[in-house]
Length: 495
Ligand SMILES: *[C@@H]1O[C@H](CO)[C@@H](O)[C@H](O)[C@H]1NC(C)=O
Ligand SMILES: *[C@@H]1O[C@H](CO)[C@@H](O)[C@H](O)[C@H]1NC(C)=O
Image (cartoon, rainbow, N blue to C red; front, top):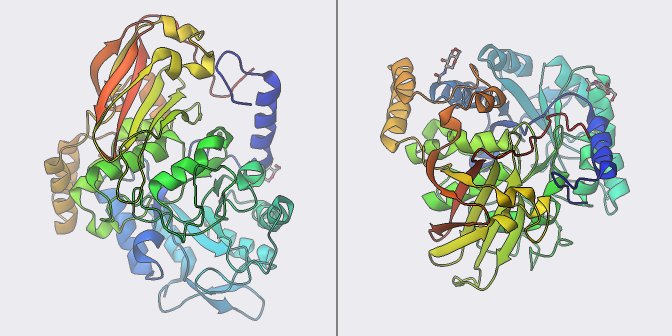
């Protein structure tokens, strides 16, 4: 059922369309962008943390590049009241959840909260299993916009897709019944084949165990010996960037407007990976159309990390109106392995709404590599063996990391936000892409140069795209047709 531009089967699309309609809360037409405290702060949550963080999102220009959900994770509650409603911890959240939602809304952002489809949450606070209606009502009454719904302590109610589906569907229905559109984010670790049913009830679904701050190190807690085995979807934690990418590769096409494969929150800025590895991590999450939730403590964000997270040319791929994931068209295992025995190189390719094509060369080998892909391979979805019409066109090549913000400019933003003075000036000097003024869809249509990186060359008809890619890094290109007609996707995917 791999979708293709020209050879797309009407039946396949109508299945996808029906699945998209099932959630029908109008949200996540492109993957959600935001911040969540878990990766960096765990249970160390408070009203101050969320208020300070939302101010930082504004000051650093992150809200305006698109990160508009502020999501509070586990550990916020203090049991239930006598009527069965969850109570917020009054020490950590003295003014309660409605106050926080109002404060975040006032800053032009949206508020997310957390619970678990279990007896307890993962940190053993009260869970929502068999309390769904009460808890959905609480979230709605606090003006919450987003619910992340975890999978711990499920009381044995898992083991088949149907059992898990039913358990998560109760909350889907309870949220819907409140009448308040709340983005529903499943965090069930890919258990019970979530990618086969998540889109029916949710706006995103985790497809693996938890990420950790490593590019490729295997860990027994991420309980698959071979992450390339598509059936190996046992949950766990300590899953590396490469492990998660290999797991999602066989079903990237399940993401669609309204519902997305969630590769888990970003580790960019946390310190466990190199700059090149973070670039690769961020780029690939964007290409696969994963939600992008910053996981670092942005009160102490290194300037280098800011220049990764705020690259509008990469975010524009993630937010492309067509909502089609790139897919892996080649994997090479015959490359130098590292001390863990890990080494591989991937080519990923995907269609974009305006007829452009995004291509990523991912180097997870233990050395720099010369990589290449012919147009016949890049456009294989549109016709195998070089039969795609695009192979006969010439393409301009744009390097999507070519326009990366300088660290000096980013440091000025960080310094200004720390000092609390000169913020407007620093933002003006940065001249960064501002989605509050121009959405990604409109900016792409207007050909805003900040969304296209820098032009580095071209590939002639029947030609080959080539690049040298550093160890544990990525090169990401946007191919733009030179004059020839390319098919454009309708945002609504009319058949
Ligand atoms: C609830 O579901 C119905 C039917 O799918 C949909 O039309 C409506 O928009 C949903 N409402 C909310 C608040 O999600
Ligand atoms: C983005 O645009 C909005 C609306 O004009 C403005 O309030 C905000 O300060 C801008 N942000 C940045 C980072 O320039």
